[in-house]
Structure formats: structure tokens, C-alpha cells
Image (cartoon, rainbow, N blue to C red; front, side, top):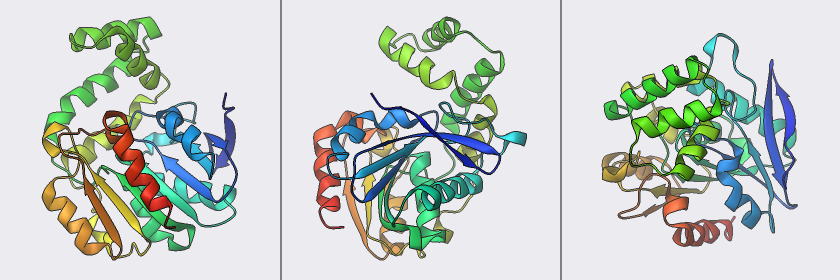
Length: 266
């Protein structure tokens, strides 16, 4: 059983877990996730690595941000500060979705902190207007302060095909969240709030880009993948055909094979 730890980052307290010994490896979860999103990977990687996994501000048990500060810039600064304070050497930095975009910013702006980069279907594009209505509904649900059971019922009412276990898992992830964390993510899903192209050429470390199927909920279409491959000087690209956004859940064996292939070289 992993014990949560706390670390102060400015005025906030970030919750994180740590397991294993060896060189440091930091994993950043996606939007509405928390450190538990990486539970399977923590147990596998801790045999060789010192694995550090935080919950982002407003997620899990980490502090809610004052004045609704949840945008890209503060996420990058939080992650960089945590790495600088906790890790004793440059890290392998992995991120899924929102965490992938954050990891790219850290690698570009703080190159001395990152020795290799792992991007699982990073949230690097804009114009996902189909995502906006569900995100707004989720934000408004949390603003009403539901109980756990009420939140489960609301999720099931909006998603008739969801099974009970999945509804409970979704509610458990959403309930601790600050509803105001949704607002910048909604904006990032609709508009080019941050421009990933502006940082790509500054990423110099070995990078693994894992691309999901865009038509199945993936965040990286082929055009975006091509830009990343061209701009990042040392980029290995693997496309997972017919696999959706959560690659490590939908194709765990292939995901781990690709991941370990990179880790064996850094």
C-alpha cells in the first residue's frame, strides 16, 4: 500500500507517492486523474526506478488553487518545482494527455531536469468542441457539491451504457477535484490557449511519442504527430492502431513493451 506524501509548491500542497530506488522517473496524469491513474505502472517500474507520481493541483488530494489558476503555465511550473525539490538527478518524465502536454513544457523550459521524455497521447491540439459539453456538465455537477452516491447516480444518468464499477471509479476521480480546474481545460479544448509548436524545437532529450487512434478519442491526429516528429530532434514515434486515448489501459502489454524499450536505452 502506497502512502501519500505532501510537498509544498508555493502556496499549494501537492500530494504524491514514491516507490522504488534507482534513477528518478516522474509520471504526470491526465485531466481528472490523480496519482492512482498510474497504479499499475508504479508497481512495475519500481523494481528498477525511483518512481515519483504527483496529483496535479486541484486533483486527487492536492490543494485547490487560489483564483482558479489551473492553466498550462502553472502546471509546468508545479511539475518543474516538484522535480527540482525531490529528485536528486535529471528524471525520465512521462505524461498522459494533459500530463503529456505539461511534460513537454518542462522538458523544453527546464532541459537540465529531464533526461528522457515519454508522451502517451499528449493533449497538444485544440478544437475538440465535442469534448466541451461533457466537461461543462461535469464542472456544474461538482459545483453543486454532490455526495459520492449522488455523483455516481448523475454519471449513470448521463451515460446509460456505463457499468456500475466504471461509474464508481469515475466518481471517485471527480469528487476531490476543484470544479474550477475544468475551466482552463475547457478553453484549451476549444482554443489554442497554448501553442505546443512553440516549445517543440527546444526539446532536446530522447522522446517517445505514443499516438492513439484519433477517431477513437485520441488527442494527436496524424498532422500533429508529424509536427512533433519533425520538430523534436530525437523522437521515436509509435502509433497504436484501433486503440483509444488511454493506451496503457487498452493495450497494456504493447504499451509496456514500447515503454521498456525506451527505458532500456536511457
